[in-house]
Length: 373
Image 1 (cartoon, rainbow, N blue to C red):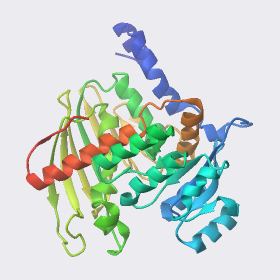
Image 2 (image 1 turned 120 degrees about the vertical axis):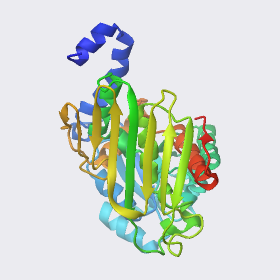
Image 3 (image 1 turned 135 degrees about the horizontal axis):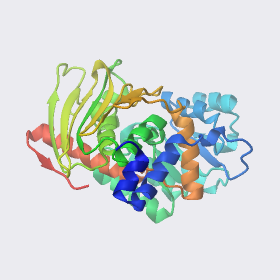
Image 4 (image 1 turned 30 degrees about the vertical axis):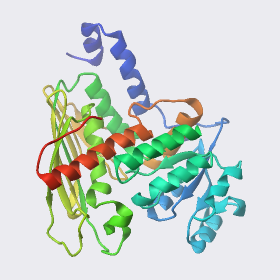
């Protein structure tokens, strides 16, 4: 097949053309934040958790058109004071972890972005939902699928949206690979590889505290390979196997995984082989193999720039600031009902949490775990 047009004409699938159009649009359209003279609704966001990633999001939002940072929630008064000065946040939009339920009486805040340690997400999201505000939650959304489903149910009952910080779902080069796969340009997908890891430092940080993190590398960097295996293949796994390796039990205590290798099987017969680690550097790579082509991305999930190539050549879609595009597109989802080519809602996150549960079970038992997402 010489072109995507030939492919569509030969198959005669107008429905497939309609399916591909949204992916192409999201992958190639000019980012919302670059459009001039926007005069529509703006998503007014309070960030909960003013750590390093919260700061990254806040800085990226300076360039947003459809989203604006208007509030903060923190347990550290000095951080609140600093953010007030840095981002022009009024005192009436500042809260701590004890009183943030009061946002229900604040009409100037539309949504709260929860960027706190994993184990805190569940209770905080439930409180935000009860306050009647939309929720954006960092990934992994919770520490297990049971808690994740409770969060989805709570937001549904409260009539608010629950979105998750899957920034890669808006990244142009990632979306181009998805488009190519959907268009049949890679043929039948046979294999996916996801390598995610780095050498973690300070042993006292919350990421190495099971009570706060819910685990170890899988709950931090491994989530990218888990979610990536699904959006790159276009399928959900039906079985999981996994093996854990721990070389430093003093640093990586019971329940905190250092390195886990895990494998997925998909309904089509495709398989995935992935690695998540806190003890190796230079691991940020995706590889997708089909019987007609392939795609390789390295870096594949870092903050940017994402680099990649396929059997057709280098990927050259625009380089974006992930969090800026994410926040503008989330505003479009909330206000306009826009549907991204790969979901970013709570149901999507629960699928990943079910896979995390299965990975830990498979690593513990040494057996194959069947999953139904």
